[in-house]
Length: 255
Image: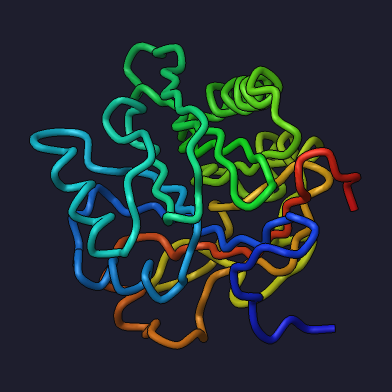
């Protein structure tokens, strides 16, 4: 059955949390910042996994301004993770954060992960925002490092989101999807392709979740109140991915 609308955020009586998760490559806020903030705000996310956050002069000021315009707060990342960043709503109680730098390959841009552990309701969730390499072999190695980092976070449930620079048929994407749920594949909603806004033809951005997280819907938000095609085209050079997920309470059996 087609999913017509994503569920709103809520905490269930059993303590499980229905959360709205957004992944977005924002190209260092070099495009229309107001359009970008309008898109993020209209998605009403609890958690935002950013890629290509500002990294240079006064980057913290720029990141904080985007968070404020989007009715969110900055959680971690940015220049300290070489681009990946996490924003959150006030629903999230932060347990810990860590920005991780990956090994540098000479001649290539250094990559990193922005990670955190948060609680929403009685759910405890590991978060990892990533932007994997353009180079095939380095990207594959980074996908393995990503899975290792999730294991090291030692959390009952986790969400990974980002610009994978790989299509679902690629070996790095397939490596991640073999261990994690590809949320679009589980419960497609909205649009599929994330690149480019002017000519959507490939899915290289994704939201993934560990087993036990229930995927209620996931895709590019093309038809929700407050989002226009002109804003999506003006905001950045990627389309966002929005998902609604139900995360069980700590100690609950996965469903």
